[in-house]
Image 1 (cartoon, rainbow, N blue to C red):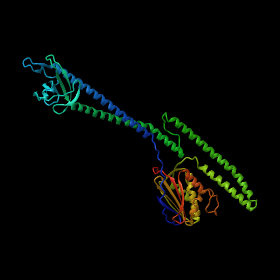
Image 2: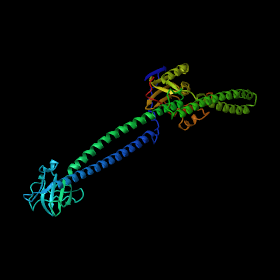
Image 3: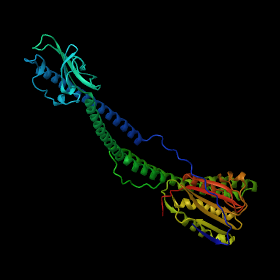
Image 4: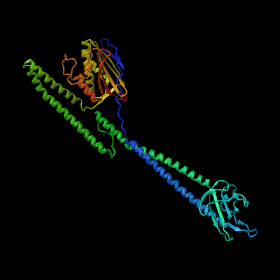
Length: 472
């Protein structure tokens, strides 16, 4: 900011930093977060259930397929088996339809046993070495897993059959590698999980977008309510959704009703003040004709009535107004110009440090009232110098007004803000200036403090809410 002097030289001041703004309470619950959390839980449950159902169905399908395949291979093995007329040994009329049974070490095996002796087996098991040939111990009558001759886990089935060419029963067994089945299941599970994960992410993203789009009108609605509270509301331009429009219509009607009530209240207060003014004048005239002791009592009561009326009129005057952006430096310059004659007559100097870029959202008249009252008090109390400095800290603007007068005792700093209290009783007035300032500061959610100045006199610190993102 820039420093300016009016009148004589001014003493340097070192205003202390303003108090930080009070912490604002945050809402504990959020509609958006609740909806997102519910949608997320629902999506996860849906994906988990879908994955479990699909994997279970595929497992059942693979089991049925393996059972059917092994049963068909067993039937084929039994139908191809015959006894050689020349040697009398068992043989197959032709090879099995699945060539993997003839591939060495493929672990696709079949075997024919008589009791516990291996009679014939597939080429994948190698030649029969009676009686040391390993037995394919597949479960009888059902498909199951077991440890095969090569030490690997196999899935197979066995059945005892009495062939047409023999009187005794033979055990026919077929089996395949279990790891191939597990590999197929693992590939399917991975594919299902990847696809469902992609679909889940897409579903969650869609839900988030829909929620953002659906709740977006609430941001405009909130801005409108804030504008009503600040007194800057106009007719909203938003096109409300069907669900919000009834609330918006009610709020618009409520705003119109409040404006009408405030206008009526202000008019009635003005009428009341006008009605009381004439009787008070008559009472003052009567007081001039009565004995001095009675006249003093009458004058004191008249002053109390007048002070109360003026105070309440001041409240009505600044209530219900619309707010606008006001450049603080312009207000200070105008007030300095208005006080220039007083400053020169009393041989005072005014030192200003006011940044040009600070703007406040308030009623311009209210800002003139607050700063003007404090500057006027400083002019009345100062003996040589007055200082006004402005600082901004986060969301607060601190306006510090100091003088080099006698100061205000600490015990009287609270009392001086009360209605009708004047520290300097030699000057005329009803002591309403500081009380009105306090009312205005309270209206805007600010704070006023009285302390000791570095210049030796009183220091009035005025703190008002400030939006640093707003530039003139």
